[in-house]
Length: 121
Image (cartoon, rainbow, N blue to C red; front, top):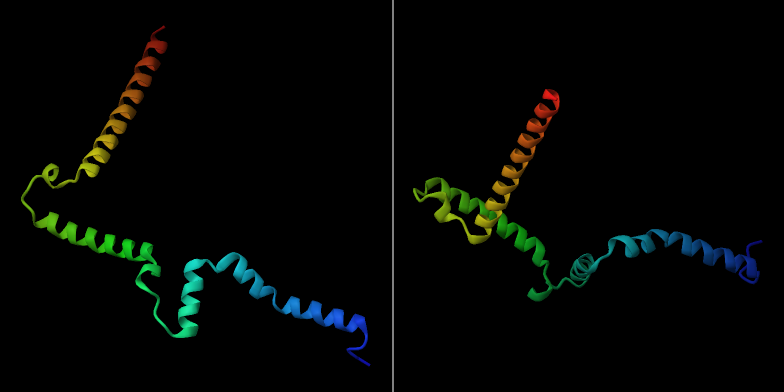
């Protein structure tokens, strides 16, 4: 009844195979980025990746977290003033934050003053 001589049967089997592979296609399209691909190859071949192909972002984040933790421990035991311990980037960011806060306070103060002047009129 189901013969491969019938062209419709061959067509249906091809379409069924493609339908079975839909999940694999979606995986490759949406999930399989370079890092995932390299991990799959590593797992299949059983060989570790060369150092230049490792995920440097993850290493950077974890090393940054450990550096931040170490820095926090040092700061808590350090008698030096905070301004002397801060890097230039940290000082710049602190100044930006302080100036933004001052600007917000000035804006809220000027709005209050304007409201009072309007009420007096």
